[in-house]
Image 1 (cartoon, rainbow, N blue to C red):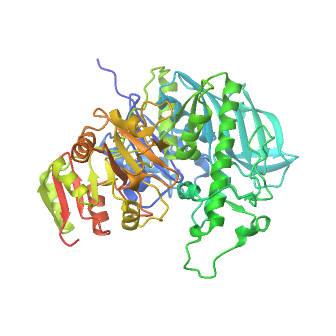
Image 2 (image 1 turned 120 degrees about the horizontal axis):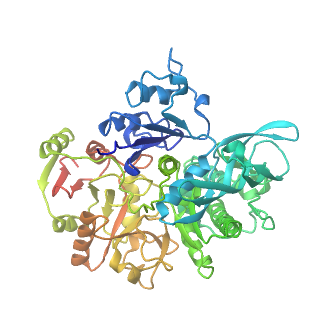
Length: 599
């Protein structure tokens, strides 16, 4: 008799909410809520939970990942009183409807484990048999602490975790941040109060901004939401080292101690710069229409926060190796998406025999993946190493010709047969083309399934595509390159490939002038290597581009407009074309080109 499959769904509730559905230890799909609701960073994974029903009618376990426990959920279901997530799963029939909803045995609440779930996502997907995790995050689990005979609220900022199979995650060090004005308290903290019976870890409790909070402060100073730190990373190379900017960290401390006189945290959300300490920071243009990012004060502040925070993370990497004795390091949490820093570590660590893996889904959506993987390996005592070789983890879609034609007609578009060669001709004629195929990418990077593509040799390409996508002038673009050609064009600092676009790498001498539209002002490019096994359709398109132009690389950016999530469905794709100046949508699975009539 065949064994009944085990279905596990893990959800993350806060910003970047989403679901990871797993069957017998394999990911069926992982999807962020924003892709379905079209609301950037959307919380509350209701639409994605409903998506589970397309794959299974029953779950064995619903794992809930968040920074606060379920019993502190804001909403409750009328009459039954269960939390909204248990209630939705029960009403959908995914879990037993007859069980007491206030204490449902199929629902597992992994509160107080936010950073461990980041660590689990990175560790299980790294392919390492053992590792130490460096988690650098804005504000993780909400943890009440007794300090100086007072009860204060703290939040995780940086954590070092020893990771072992099947599901052994032991905290070695943690920095807890708080809004309360207290001196730094250093102590050994019993971990059993947070789920690690009999274990202790080194703990720092302080009123200082963590590494990500410093980055958030500068991001807000530049005029954006604190969560939009990627824009600050794009602005940084326009700045220079400015002696008027105070040091953000105490370089003599053995953990990240920020300068509270300069950067004041607002846990859990954001931080602010004390502009009185840096006179240029208080300067604003008289004309409110002036883009403040053109002011050197903003550029220099972005430069300062990038260079100083990456130095602090490097110190944490070395601290993690020292404390654990392990030389394989996995990196996650929001700062893991900093592709400038990720590349910089490779140069700094090249002589230290330290191997790093940076988790591509380092944002909070990755905690759903980590929760599902951790629970499965613990439940089954499974020590099988399954490297996360793909990010094409979105739901599967299958469109008939009738579906494609009907959707195109709705948006006043026409459908025609096409080939890679014809699409390449469109691109070399300096047309923007979108590509839509297969399963969407997990995480924030577009990797050829939901991408906007263009000619990288166009000297004006960066400004043109930024304008069409309604993005800031300084935002850099990525390139997708045939894996076999990457080393002739870029310096990967010892890596064989970089399939998930997690590094902003230097181009080789003489390359910048060949592909100017995807080389950033600092001479780097966010690179995705592509081979035939990873994405055959995309590989063949890039190869066709190479055959016509001699350039084995194509301009790639995410298929969305400024402030919008990546498109998820064919409907989303056509809507985006309708709302922009983009004319062409390529569907390589069907050899179809969709063209808007009224563009």
